[in-house]
Amino acid sequence: MVDSPHPGPLSSTVQAWELGLRLREHRERLGLTAAHVGRTTGIGGTNLSAIEAGKRRLTAAKLRDLVAVYDPPPDERAELEALREQTDRRGWWHDQGRLHTEEFLRLLGLEAGAHRVREYAPDLVPGLLQTPDYARAVMSAGTPYIRPVDVEPRLRTRLARQARLEGDQPLGLDVVLGEAALRQWIGGRTTMRHQLAHLLEVIDGRSGHVRVRVVPFTAGAHPLLGAPLMILSFPSPRLPDLVWQETAISGVVVDKRQVILESAAGFDETFNRALDESASRALVAEVHDEMERP
Image (cartoon, rainbow, N blue to C red):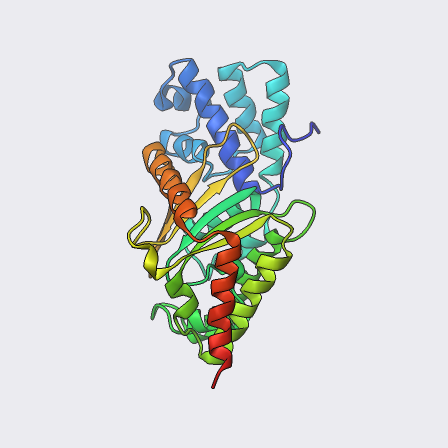
């Protein structure tokens, strides 16, 4: 089998997305409609759209049918087949369908194959940095659609995500926290004290691939004021950034170029307006010490 066309953590979700994008590029280069390709290959327009979006897997036989129509160079044919073979790999998130929406499962797969995440978290510590007790308290107090029996399985999902911060290819993570995330008592004083202690450990010990900054209340208005935001970036130069937008009860992966550009610009501006890493650490430590007092 040919090596992956780019280095980076493997995720079948990301490989399926890249394969779909490359197939769509070939179709559009030839000026072919999805309906025309469907008549030629037997892949209906709806199925082809799902394949091109990376949301439906492609068999080896159907890939050969598409390659016969698009006629890419031989070396790219090998790359396309390598990508298709990687889409057959099952990630740990594929077994979470009972607990999570299809869109959130897609986020898990994308995050597993990302090389960098930028996240703005106005009033909660983000999932990648949560302690088990803090995460459990968030889930237990959350939407009524989360049944008590599902809290522990969901917690295991959240902790599994955090494995991306370890290993040979750790996820780069830039986080901007609102000061409210430090001061909102989630789970009580002890839980918050341990959560803030964990943040300090992360700030001190992640060898530069995790950066945490805090926007204090005194900073005033900034471009991201009002809603959490996550921007995912990927190793392959073919793959654009994606945005994850989440509310209390739902979330969606956004691939609209203008939304992504504005989100990235807003994040960068907010990151620069936030306290620097040293001052942010000092504020986290200050709030932690306040919770040590009776």
